[in-house]
Length: 390
Image (tube, rainbow, N blue to C red):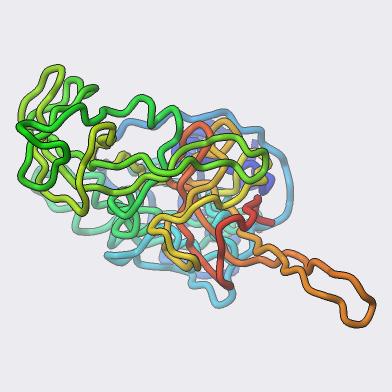
């Protein structure tokens, strides 16, 4: 089966790891860069796949996609380069936009180098080249970065790899406000009592906490007050609670109850407040893609409590893994049409929805997800719709 004739429907994208496994298993190894570029209208640098292996990496779990044979090429960006040298500070979204009109087509044209041990990871200094195979555009890692090829023994941490979204824009999203999914709120450790003669606690006090198990001394937590319930605007079901940031603490003594010292607070901590580990488990090395399922949801909240939502703001969606959403999925935001009076024909008219931007899902739960707004062409609001990109 020819690799160059395999593509995916827009609704069936591959994760980076899945793409690597799928391409590697179809018809043997892909052809070398030189032979692939011989049929390309764009020039190539003539580099071959002879880079030394890099540090080991465990493949994440992959699902089995359904492949469709289609002849529609991925839409390339106007003025795209033939080669691009990855820079420090780049994100995968930035790189995808450099080559593609729609970044979520990236998994369809990413052509892995089987001689690089982590072919789906991209590092600063790597040279990405646009080649054509049987008339179809493909992007491949032409040359791995030189700073990883020194003769001395070294291990390159995966954190040096290019992330899909700006890490600094999501690392503190918990401390800015959070939505607690109902099942999550019920299972998180909670503040039982304050040490000493205190009904409430603030920075400098110690609190007794139930529900902490097997965490190392010195582990840090965000303390969150469980606020107003949050209902799905589509069916009025309870999907979670508004989380109100209270402060931070560090584990001083294990057991049941455990002892946590509050190191910083913005308001008083009271019994019933929940503790969330400060180290947020967010995978940042993934490929943007369209969802594998049809998604029709809404923005139900914005982290930080602002009214208007712009680029690189974190939003909460009323759809989650139970609805087919997964990390890396890209959705289009549709601004609800305004209802206006018709002065000429009488009555009122609701204007049509308009594209307002694009977001990428970076954290999922059963019934809710977090997304980062990657593009905002208009002001985005709570309750705006989110659907599969066209």
